Length: 198
Image (cartoon, rainbow, N blue to C red; front, side, top):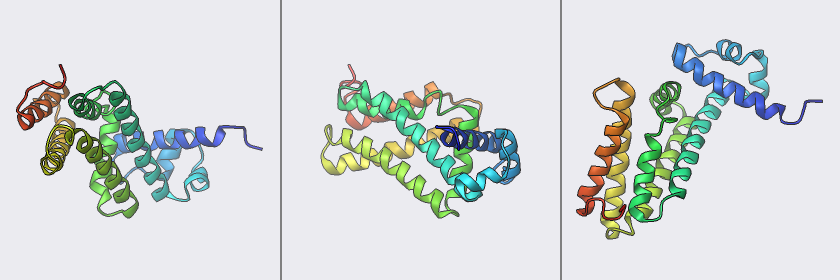
């Protein structure tokens, strides 16, 4: 009889090993054999917990999305004003955890593969809707409804673009600069620089 919590532990081991394998060997070369070896487990256990490689990849992307959600909620919990809630979403996306090299490699791989894999595409769409929902809710308290929707969509696109620039280059754009650029964009949208965050 398996020990209590062992299934969850092994699932997390395999997901962590998948992220490491993608980072070290690339998406196509992250085979079940290499992933299970990185996890210190037998290859057959992947089928037991995830059915197949596609199931493991989907679980890994869901785990990354859940980590981003928790990071966003952590930042949002300290926000008291609509402007601070917008800044919280920006901060969460450019947090140290989200810019960790292995996490970056995994996100880049999943973004490129999502359009070809329905399960990954669904996770990506959910992730995008969460960001738009959080930004839209905050902007609606600062701008008319139509402007708020446009502002939320624009900032979400800017966050993703800046994140991609940071992820693909060791310079000249840094995380701190990306955060400042995104916040400056919000200032310009609201035409009241930092008013809500003071």
